[in-house]
Image 1: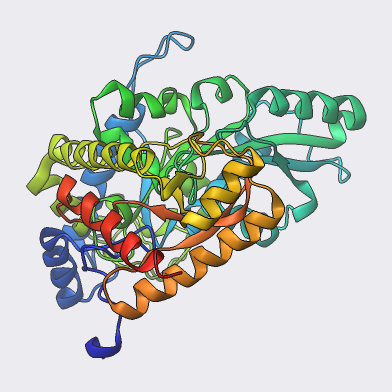
Image 2: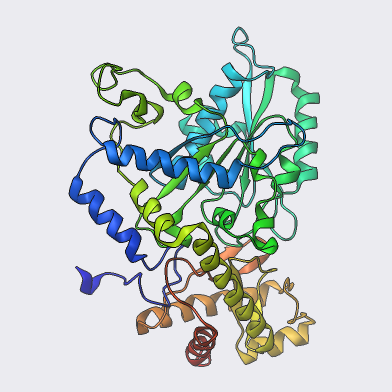
Length: 443
């Protein structure tokens, strides 16, 4: 099996938002598998239950423990769970947000008015799981409003406000905005929405930080600043299996509303949840949408114990610095061209053979721009180069790199991310450039 499988621990596996496994987190996974229990009751999983509670409390302080001038209140705890992936986290966010809008908030919802519909907002760069989640919850895809983005891929907050106001003027209280999905680290661009500007709206704000939410561990202003305002969001998710190399899948979901998960999910199944059982007050299962639950918390707990939050932040900062260096090398090399303005965790670029480069110059394309306007006829050829070059690198076994469309370009471009647990240096940047040139110059 290993012979014919992709080695995701390879230093030049860039194909997805995950990579090499951290051995400390892997040890946690092995322990979890060997114990073979389910984290729904303390009775069945006492150690894992307390580990999960400890992890959520520590994460809650990182995300929500910031002074809120408007509410004049300090952090008093959070609600959180380990969930099976970012998509399920986004589904959970919609689910609990609807419950909150119906029963726990001062919204305009009226249970006696069957004509009222809830409406959610996400940007055009948001993860596709939102469209699936809104269908599964029964809210309906017609009630998912896609907000345009700015040229850099960040949600256009002015357009969000215009859409909300227009909806109120057109529909009054028959369509109620109840949810905004904020993207912190989009899949392709790596773009971040302005959380601080969006949380001003008095509806549920969910921060999808599956990829970029790891910025909470950094103290550097250029990285931590990407998450400014997250302490006032209603819910937050991030995937340690992406940036930090925890085994698949390791995902944390947090809300600053204590007990909201139990309020939205509890079924009180008596055969499982019984206050007379040992440690029943610590049970987590009745706060979850699922019954059986993997003991994923030990993987994140192991990362936090071994590296500490500061150590994880340092890993992240080193990756950002190397990617900055990659951007510099792309700008210096005549065969490379940025496809869009780079964000800290993602670099998107084209390989441009000499003949296409000369044709671009002839057409007046600014090849030094990070947002070049490429004519359609050249875009087709440039996109074909990306496809062919990816296949050559793949078949050589030297690199697995993705190509994908990007909103401001017709041509498919390459994307480099430093996901997973692996050292990466400036020498690796030169190796990447050399490999792409080696095969690209044959096309």
